[in-house]
Picture 1 (cartoon, one colour):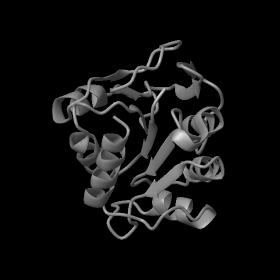
Picture 2: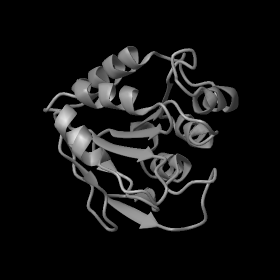
Picture 3: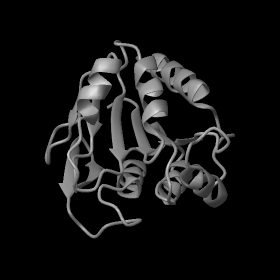
Picture 4: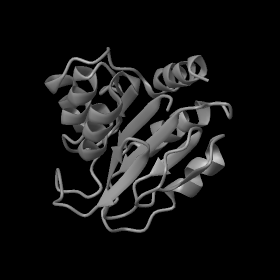
Length: 187
């Protein structure tokens, strides 16, 4: 299993998310997991990411075996968690008033994959992702946060920066470059 990239996004985060996904080369061997706060609403996010990026994207399914070079999106009304080699979906209690939420994904990724995890918190209007970034960095992984001055909704990036001290916040352009170069090093 290679690099695990986990991304949290909510209000205002679609543009930065698309920038990051578009920057990933088709040769990227990382497995990418995305949580967007969509609740029970239908979503075409996998279609958008597959169209704008170079990697196949789809909603995760319970029990899916994790493959390299793919993007997995948490489906509506389901938390997405990782265990070694597979994806688990559940409808446990909402976290930060939402399901799916990023913290279940981030924490399970950190506990399972440790230093191989890159976590990214993008624009959003609550504190989801902060505890997850803390877990990722505590397990030796890399925590990245969108610059709150650029984020349309600053609450998620600010919460992550306040709870943990991951690397300095980056603009969406720099996040895309950083993740793409990290992916290239691990091809």
